[in-house]
Length: 257
Image (tube, rainbow, N blue to C red):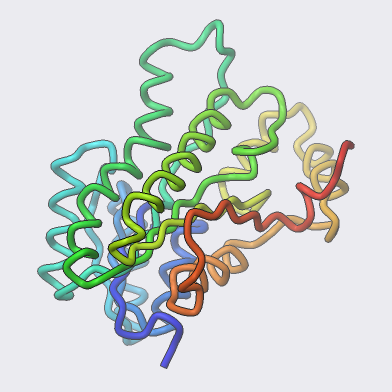
């Protein structure tokens, strides 16, 4: 029996990267999972791979910024598996704008993807958790919610908002035995960090500089984040809620670079 045995998890952005790793880890630990993903090709491939390995997995193409799609995906999850116990709000995007030059449309896109989508998933998942007598919500924020670098506005603002939302939901729903936590990764080897490296004139030099400021001398892997998220979502973490949890290889321990 695994850490999340007999649980059902709804994981957004699980067609690749950290989300995919979380889905695979939770299946390995006994959960059934819904892959809620905009990319039909990657989402279906992950779900099929998990099913082929003997796990219970469902793919639902979902744009988390559209409430009707979120509601339908959550309903399909409950219809398929009979319950909903865990929500992982992993889907998100990096945004790199000059605050004086970005458009209102670009601002709205950033907040819709990184904040509104998480709220919509919570809105539709929480009632099912109440029916189950409790649940666990894990919001994947970022180290940029606390400390950041120039040139990635308004990503840090959005992730800070997600952490604030985490605290409020933890207070509002704790009496219903629903725990809400924010996991804040540092640099992790995904397509998003590669995008950031490639913004530089010398991507390799940018990566080398990133490695030097980590206490462990390296960046993380999606699997390392997935291990931690699965623990936080599980009953083993039953007294942890409203927390802002950093998993960053010692990056935030550094005073200055």
